[in-house]
Length: 315
Image (cartoon, rainbow, N blue to C red):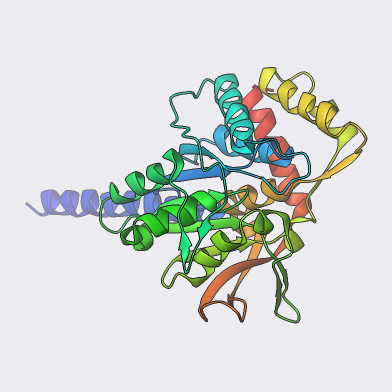
């Protein structure tokens, strides 16, 4: 009888120990990599420059980031922008998904123009904005949709204006603005912001919207050297050759490129590689606290990027 009781006690203790180790390891690795229990949508003006492409591919090849939508955004203020800049982004998004055999991921087109404005900002209806709403409203209670914008925030702001009930369901990460964290001064004279200033203001003014900003001030520390990039990617396959061709065709004279958009993807994947601070929104906006990245570990991000490439390419 006593032996049987001791045996049961030992079994129970073993079960408790194993459960503890499992939970501890999950917590440990989530602390290193972040938690992706929620779904991710990436909204990008990939037709504009080239760091968007490197960022999108980085996200799509990571097994821990469940990208459930790739949206295209307009970049009409660029001097080389065509009549429908969003469709250039859309075409590139579709090429990336094709190269990675991920065309099953929804990729609706975004708005052609920035927000309309009368007495109040008016949304630009698009399939991309509708998709954000659909995904957010379909989430179970307590879960959030992570939306990462790498360009103008037109589609995200439009979705909020079209259906404000999704606000509590959103966890937004924005690549845009500039910020002097020592003097706590914002600057909206930044490319993504200028491509739809009203849309950015909508996000900043929306109470209770979870908002984390990767500024151009912080992300400029992450850079790719052209020679090193070509050496590391030239033999890795079609998707990487496509990224290299993009560099050669669009910016052949640049021997270095700032990876603004890669910085925000790496920061989300590896929270320990970036520092965030809660700060107040710009003084002209609704006074509320949001999060801003104030520094990144650029060298570590670069190493992680190349490590991900090697792992995905099977080297």
